[in-house]
Image (tube, rainbow over the protein chains, first blue to last red):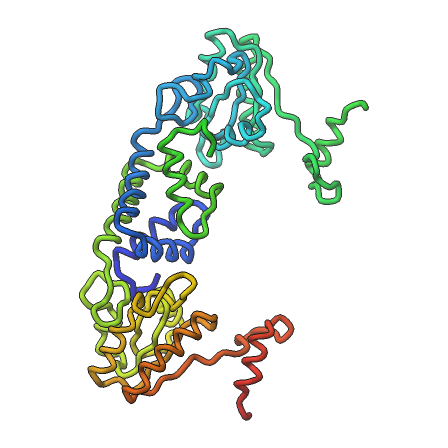
Length: 200
Length: 200
């Protein structure tokens, strides 16, 4: 937005532009759109922002986002409490739940260890994961962080802490995506697919 | 978002998804992002929304968005008040102002005539445009609506109303975009470029 725009519009544009994946041009378009919304709808939007931030917190058990003491997955008696799938963020849970194949529970780290970005193990929800395993009843912990440098390092670090507690620690399998084409696969994926090959 | 998500998060996601160009997947990502923002920053965002909607209204003269009685362009004594450029929406003004070549003033219609979408001439800011011209001092009105069916029809309709008032009505030139390549131009643009050709 240029200097001929009204100041409250410029401020709103800057707020939109702070959101991930929204540049200045899109932010200006969104701010103009808000001007064309009905006042009640803008109030509803603002209320939804404040309300979500105020009422949503971390699940007492798995650190997923919820507005109850326990999230619906931890609260579900049908889920297998002996298997914990450790993920980086709540949106990874959504991905597993869409597949509908996993019936265990989760643990959300809320980040990955990254010394370069000044994220240390103490900044993640690792202590509550150790406490869950120490409380007993857990047979397997699946490290489901992304196959990046930080994801692998975090999985390795946590695995070192868990093994002395007598629990099986596994890592997701990495290889060719199903339906993917060999010629489009990157070298690291191909290497992993070759290394982890199975007998037919 | 699936049914394992906290209700206030689902509501916030739906609010984001109502914005233009934001699908359900992006909306969920934005809602998760809001959860990771500081409470003060979320409050600032909500306040910016409410404040922009409350304080920004239409300029008394040109119907542009402003938080003062007159927008900065109408209020600028350096702008030529005898030339009015008629645009569909406030964001079109930003496009002209970026070019820095236009020194007249504007008039924002806030839409285009579109019987299919039930937008009639009375829904647009046409009466205030006629009033400006009737008050005198205007020598030229430039119809700068987009070269679409609705844009052309709206320009033609308003031009019929303006001509009896003794003002020159012009339309933006349409042709090949500068720096564009002939082979990538669509047929309508090529046709317009041919039709409006100039002697060298």
